[in-house]
Length: 373
Image (tube, rainbow, N blue to C red; front, side, top):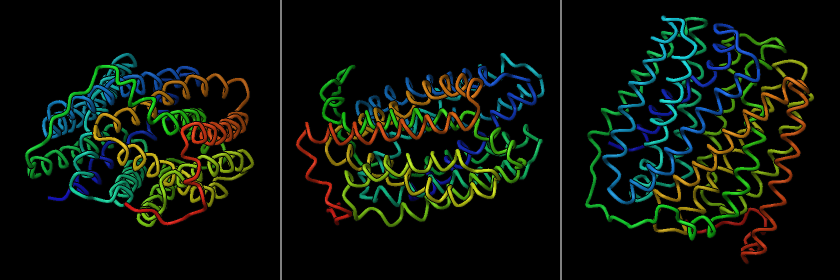
């Protein structure tokens, strides 16, 4: 059983409900923009802790156990969302979101490290995650306001990925000692961790209320799913062709193109104008994510730990971004947030170039030159 199928299904079930959460909080529970930001940040905080500690555990104790526990618990907790909606309990809904952040943060680092060690190209492997995100977005969009059934369907898809993971062949794994606070790894990979966190903090300022922005320019639930799907399926195509490029060049392009994309978002007056921008967004994120992933995987033996640290930097931005974005959206409106995010992505680009120069790696950026694996 190839890990690609597990990546596809786990991403479909995990990312599908993401676009529903701001809508449910706003319409079902009548939460303010600020409160939506707090709830999304709480989910990211749980994922931040889980991503690092689970990645480290996968290096210490092996991939299989962490992968299976994470997938099973993610399916179970996703199904619990339906119970919270049937009981109409805001506190219970938020509690389940936090629990899902802990569970969903457990398995990605173990799965990525396993795929890398099985000689799978990271761009192509990551593309299946993007395809799963697109399928999940379309899937939940088809349910309309039947949110409970959308969550149950996504839970069933995650359980299917768990069943596939049970059949994965796990050769004898090398166990690695990793200190509880791996300062050496953090410093060694600082250019990617820092630029990723700054760029993605700005991005998450947008995403926390992005479905509500799309509704404000004329989209409904199905069209929102379509907009997200264009991004995801474009990522799928792009990730399949970028493995041959140098990872540092990919990261530089990704943060630079992100700044342009967020600026263009602020100029959109209709949801149809957003659709072509989603392709540019897909290009920027595909290059940034695959480049970052390959950068940390190629440089470090502790592959699950550094992948977990990368996920934690993404999750940290998922804490800061929603909190700042909720406040900023209330004070400046959706478009004001997008201008701020554009400036932050530009700052991330400058930070990345400076840190590359300090580390002596700036010579890698020579256009889109071909690079070894």
